[in-house]
Length: 143
Image (cartoon, helix red, strand yellow):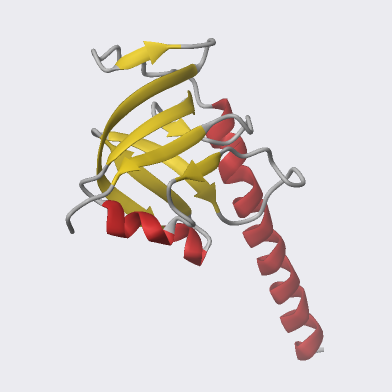
């Protein structure tokens, strides 16, 4: 009898974890408000997207542990890879140009890059949603 109750608690715990993992992306999707920064080095493109250029100042490789991988260019965070569970099969994602992988970006801090990406509701940018989106490293760093 005790073993049966223990199994029920384990099953309930697994269900709660799965629901939490699925609900976080959905809550982000429905969060209201977009931040639009009209800096001098940005160009408007189709609604909800931006092109801009700048210097790579940080790289986050958290997606290697089911998190988010991103690059920061001139203070703007661009989401490259989102880990964890996905409610849709194989999302459409843009590409990295000038490097082979997200991990290679860590060696490019200080390099110049061009970006074409979508705005997120949180005010960041993402290369998810269109295969034409990109982050292009065009000049290498001395680091």
